[in-house]
Image (cartoon, rainbow, N blue to C red):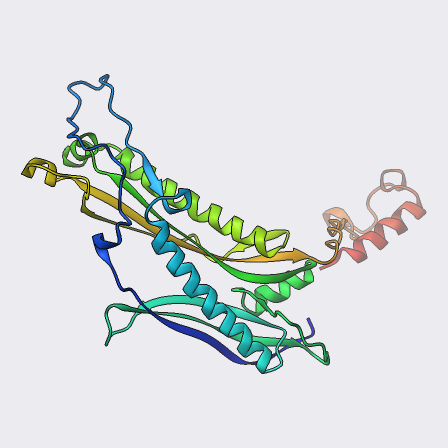
Length: 300
């Protein structure tokens, strides 16, 4: 496709989380301060327990903003390295977040990829493109009339209070869906996808390619709104976190027309006897010649 690799480029940043756990206040479930009882019968009304997500203004939005800011920093640094080596963009870019072994309260944000440039071009871009697509995916994208714009990350953290109805379902010996956890996972995935789309609209482009489905991490902590006796303190909040990575793309040319299916017709005689069919059944000489041309084109 006319591109050549320049070299490996990387952007990294180490961020210290000054506060963590419940002191962030990011798992405020906003649940009313009252004990919920398991309904006496299936038809009994159960109070609605909301799922609060970071994208909708929940307290967890503070943590998500910190992570988003760190990822923007490393993407800016990998773009700067790409420009320094004369590249036009970065392919196979992977964003990772991992704690430092020697400093548990610090996280290292890193993006690493391969800088590429158009062969023979002396144009220097002010902002190189970044994409998670590897060489094969990048070539397919260009062949289809699209170009990558920027690597994006969408993150969401959601919280749901573990009420009495959900707890009874988890303790039951019957096979049944825990609707509370289903709602939590579904809401977090939808919020992360929505954040990715919003980031893509800000950067421009006509589409978005996801890198993966985004694994969901679920855990629980004691509810910060639970006060009083030991029975209330046993209530927990379930938290879910997911991160989606993708690349926004832009169309620079109309896609090529779809290839028509070629006709494949037999040229030999049926039954092993040459020219056994009557001329009327086979058609005129001109028709046979046209069929033969079509058959030659469709030969594989």
